[in-house]
Amino acid sequence: MDKETLQNYIISVLPMPKEKAHFFAEQFESIELSKNVLLFKENEKCTNTFILENGYIRSFTFDKDGKEVTTNIFTAPCFVNDFLAFFRQQPTSENFECLTDCKLWTMTYEKVQTCFHSYPEFREFGRMMLVTNYSILQERMLGMIKDTAENRYLRLLKRHPKIFQNVPLKIIASYLGITDTSLSRIRKEMMSKHQ
Amino acid sequence: MDKETLQNYIISVLPMPKEKAHFFAEQFESIELSKNVLLFKENEKCTNTFILENGYIRSFTFDKDGKEVTTNIFTAPCFVNDFLAFFRQQPTSENFECLTDCKLWTMTYEKVQTCFHSYPEFREFGRMMLVTNYSILQERMLGMIKDTAENRYLRLLKRHPKIFQNVPLKIIASYLGITDTSLSRIRKEMMSKHQ
DNA sequence: TAGTTTTCTTGCCATTTGGCAAGAAAAAAG
DNA sequence: CTTTTTTCTTGCCAAATGGCAAGAAAACTA
Image (tube, rainbow over all chains, first blue to last red; front, side, top):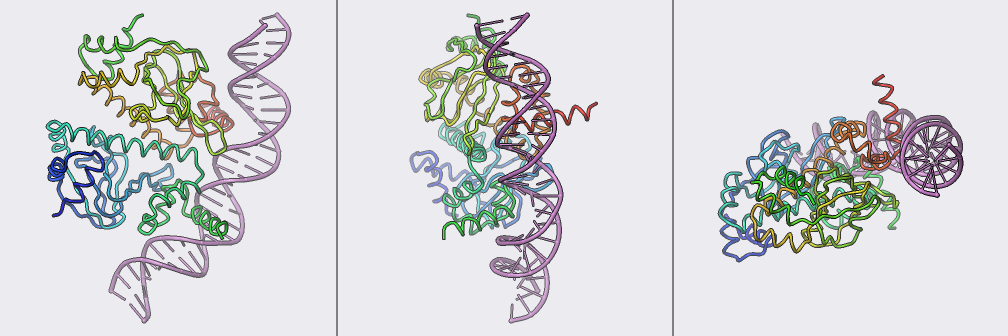
């Protein structure tokens, strides 16, 4: 069970001595999940928090017509959680689903609380995650307002090209706020534009 | 200069002894702004954080076509800030504008930092504000996905009926993600439905 | 490899939403 | 109180987006 990657990830989020990071890494447990497995279901309490080491996960909910809408696509390494629901220990309103086989690190809510209490750096690490996720949400919101679907597509392609090799286009389309039909048309448009 | 209201507001956000709340309230400075004044401009650093005691404020940005889009409408009492920009001391990407004459309490970034450093309760108060704002953003996002414009309208009407007496419909429409034309049609529809 | 399922593209048409503009209503200014 | 400005409503038309369905392509299964 190699926690080197996890340790480095922790340091990348919040710079700290290796020993500290190593110690925190030790507090996580390993877990492997297969494609299509659900981490959380809507209306369930989130008992655990996760860090994704390998694979792709998405969160989704349902719109007014009962259609799935992808709210986030998680690319390793990153933390995966509904932070608000987790920290308040309230039911989440989104579903989290493995899009590929996944390797994760996990910690229970109780253990997180214990660590928060005992280690200021861990508290700071938690705050960092909160701010980062808040920031992602805000950027997404502003992107939806300020950008066309085409630009959102281009930005995602630039930032996370690997998603396009591992996640079906209909899920990406949904994440971009359009239908797979429209995304297909945008891609076609762009092909003809750029020769 | 009566800080009773501010003190009570602080307690409502984070329960604490009156003396503590009183002390924190003392750290804020009073400020009054007229209708149409801008608190922050896009791309400016946020040097201060604010608590709105009286009045209405909105935040807005511009969409792909250069049209204003209202991202939030603040109803007193509440804190008003781009928290991410403030805590990172980075330029904000939104504008904040008084929709009415406003009475606010304010504190500089430096003072906030000093208080964070010296008082755990103040730190907790700050964390509370962060979580609350994160939560508002998330709800707004999910609302945009899961609800029709009509439902968003009804919800706002129920939650903050006073906004409708103090803020022009075109701004409310923009906040709901539609044009004033569409909002007008929705209102007409509803009139005929509910006799 | 052959068969089955899922994903992706595309055409056709319906629906939704927005732009514009004109007039009514309300609010603000003088 | 009158004038001016802003806000709100409404009709007409254009543009964007989506639904549906069929076929092509790719991925998975046996």
